[in-house]
Image 1 (cartoon, rainbow, N blue to C red):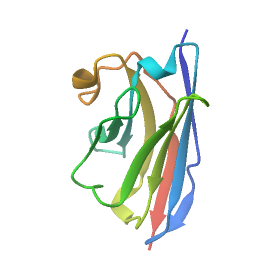
Image 2 (cartoon, rainbow, N blue to C red; image 1 turned 30 degrees about the vertical axis):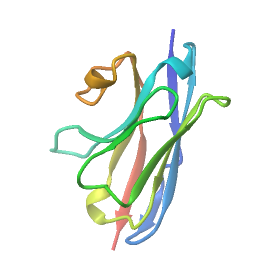
Image 3 (cartoon, rainbow, N blue to C red; image 1 turned 120 degrees about the horizontal axis):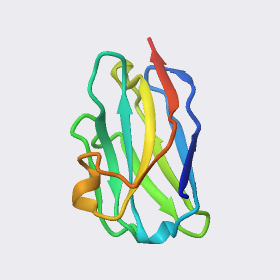
Image 4 (cartoon, rainbow, N blue to C red; image 1 turned 90 degrees about the vertical axis):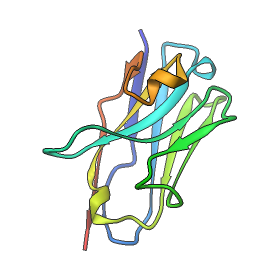
Length: 123
């Protein structure tokens, strides 16, 4: 059974940076597209960033373009999200997800989900 475990969430000030990690186990990581989503209280889940298996293609939500970068290390079965120039509106619980269909993954159709890591940005 596949498992995803996120880490790296923290409380930071506006303009700061964080790097989230997501370690995968129980499935062949390199064959899966991976994504980061986020959700804050009272809001719908939002796609943040996505990367294809092999890392050849990426996609970002409009609100994070130019500030966040997704990457993966298939040797370590690990997904990353580098977050720079953080804003208060980036405050959310961040989840990673794995899916075999990249076109469906962005819409939340994932095979595996992590439990999330909290990011809080304060002014």
